[in-house]
Image 1 (spheres, rainbow, N blue to C red):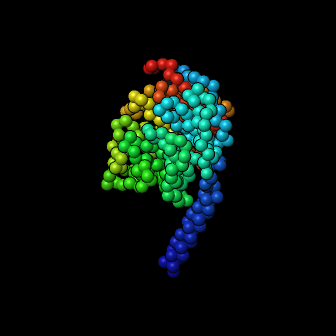
Image 2 (image 1 turned 135 degrees about the horizontal axis):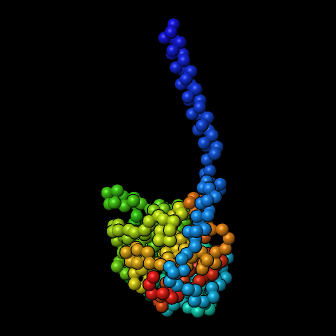
Length: 348
């Protein structure tokens, strides 16, 4: 009789535990914010800290704005590039507009769709990334080819052309870099997770995924979710990486930064961050050098914010390019203007 009573009590207790667990689980699901609209849950003191982080020490600023911002005339500008003569190409809406180094407009290429990225080859040809395909134009702005469509999941975010004539395309949707020849024939893929080759795979929480070919022959690719820039051989071997998460000016803050970068003539890097907008310089080994512009210099008004959740900052990332004279061109995708910065300090 006692044994039966004990068994009954045990069943009751187990049932109560299960019921409580179910209630807690339901409560947690109801409270779960899958959209990010309720914010990070951080207290008001964190907002105060952001304001402090957003203030850039003037002694760290190495550049100043050289011209009035260049008005692109686009409702939505996406990418900027510069040719060997210093002409500025801006992709947006459904065309590419060309400006002189002083900001005067002198040409436009009409496109059958929205351009998301572009690259200029040494021979003057232009590679344009639409959402899921690449289009190739010659120096006379005539379309030579439209490469095969990569499907509905593809989100082309960046293109780079090597001196050997290979074209590298960063697909943020599929989290992979594709390697092509100039005719659009696929030669291989770079960056897929491979533990045997010590390749971690790209973490792309938002549609920003930049790359550039460096003078050392290694392809530099941003891994934004890991807050670093990785160096790959054209065959896809990961050689090294640099960068780290950090709220201070020498780190990359938020969920996924940097979003875009460019390489200076001396091999240094110019990086752009979204959320808390900062444009900074790192030396060829990835050590922090100084600041091109902080939120104030980039025209930011209102409260500062850091995108800790990917849903907070799916848009608003700035693009960057470097012209032959070493000027840094920042495409402000909020105001759709190009800001031109020149060096004022040689070193800190």
